[in-house]
Image (cartoon, rainbow, N blue to C red; front, side, top):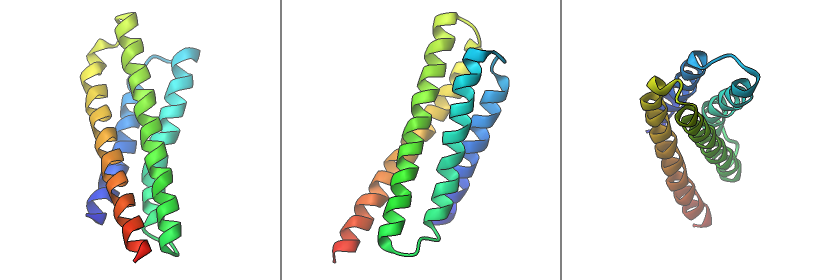
Length: 124
């Protein structure tokens, strides 16, 4: 599972970058694009860091960052989806955004489950 999550979180960051490269270059879009690139890449970087945690508490703290960053990525994906719908532009990207939203939700769910398990194991 660890190797799969390392690959998934890295692919998520790359896929978000690819999406962002297809969006218009404007001051308004750039604000959201920059945020999405930062938080989506942070998901993979912090998951990777969690695998080198020095203690269970450190592992839990790093996973909490992953959860927050994945949820933040989801937020910016939702915003980009809504903006493209409102503007009726870039609508061809909406299926791609939907897939990324689904992946972000799945990553959040997996991390939440991992956090519960880590907390239970930490109290034993």
